[in-house]
Image 1 (cartoon, rainbow, N blue to C red):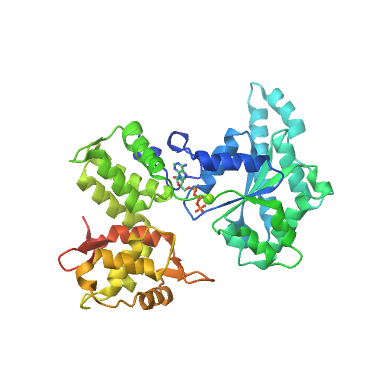
Image 2 (tube, rainbow, N blue to C red):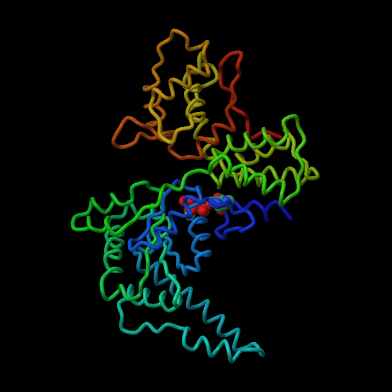
Length: 415
Ligand SMILES: Nc1ncnc2c1ncn2[C@@H]1O[C@H](COP(=O)(O)OP(=O)(O)OP(=O)(O)O)[C@@H](O)[C@H]1O
Ligand SMILES: [Mg+2]
C-alpha cells in the first residue's frame, strides 16, 4: 500500500480501513436520526463532521443527498443548489440507464427497473417540493436525509438564512411531510439555532432542531488508534528509537492537537518521507515530516505568526513568549490569565517579580492586521483566529531554555 492510500486528509469519501470509530457521537447521531426533529452537527473545521455522518448514514442504510451551502451562496439560493444536485443525480441515473441499454447482458432488466425509478418529471410542483419528492423516490423505503453541509457559508447572508428557516418549516408542513425527509444541518458554529431566534417570526424553527454534542478533536486513544492503524498495521513500517512508539504517538498528538484532518495530513507527510527511506521511522523522519507538513499545508498561518512576532532585537521578546504560550495552550477559548500562567510557568527567570501586561499583548494580537486570535463577542475570552495557527505555532516555534527566548524554525530553508 502507498502512503496516499492509507492517509487521505482531504478525502470526501470515508476510507473504511482508516475510519476511527467515535462511539458516543455515532450513538448520538443515530438517536437524533430516530427523533422527530431535524439534526444539527457542529464542530470546528477538520474535526470529522462529514466523515461522521457519511459513516453512520451508510451503516444505517440512510439515503443522503448533500447540498453545499458554499455553492448556495454562489448561486444566490439554497433551492438552486438543491436543483443543481437533483440534476446531477438524474444525470447519473441517465448514464447508468444508457450504459445498461447499450450493454448486451441484462440491459432489459435494468432498463425495466429504471422505467419506474428513473427520471423524475418536473411536473407542476414548486421546485422545493419537487426536489423532496425526487429524494423520496430515489430513497425508496429507506430513511432519507437532505444534508446541508458547510452551513457557516450562509451565516452572513440573511436572505439565505430566511430561506433555510422557511425550508425547515415547510418540510414539516402537511403537504411536504408526506415525503418524510429529514434535514441535517452541518457546520462550524456552535450555536446554529440562535441564528434563527434572531429573525422575527422564525424563532419556532429552533424548536424543530436537535443538536448532537460538538464534534471535537479526537481523544488520545482515538488519535493513537489512527496513527497505529496507518503506520504499523496498514503500511507495516517499523519505528527505531529509544522510546519507540510512545514518543512518536505523543508528539504527533501534540503537533496536530488531535484534529483528525491535521493528524492525517501530518501522518501522510511523515509516511512519504519514511517510504523514501525504506519504511523506517525515526526522529529524523518525524521532524522532516513535520516541516513538510507546515510547508505544504500551513504557509499562510506561518506567515501570520511571523508578522506578529517581535523583531530579533527586542530584548525580552515578551510578545514572542506570549505567542508561544498561546500555541501551547490546550483550551479552545482562553483568558489572559490562562496565558499569563503559561508564560510564568515556561519562562520563570524572565518573569519573576515582573508585572506582565498580557491583556495588552492579547489585544494587540487580536487587532493586528493579521490577527492571531479573536475576542469572543460577549465576554473576555479569546479563541484562535484559525485553529491551524495553533498547530503551526507548535511546529515552528522552539524555546531556547538558556535565554528563555523563542526561536522561529526557518521552514523555507529547511532540508
Ligand atoms: N473518524 C475518523 N477517522 C479517521 N480519520 C478521520 C475521521 N474523521 C475525519 N477524519 C480525517 O479528517 C479529514 C477531515 O474530516 P471531515 O471532512 O469529516 O471534517 P469536517 O469536520 O467535515 O471539516 P469541514 O468543516 O472543513 O468540512 C478526513 O478527510 C479524514 O482524513
Ligand atoms: Mg465537512
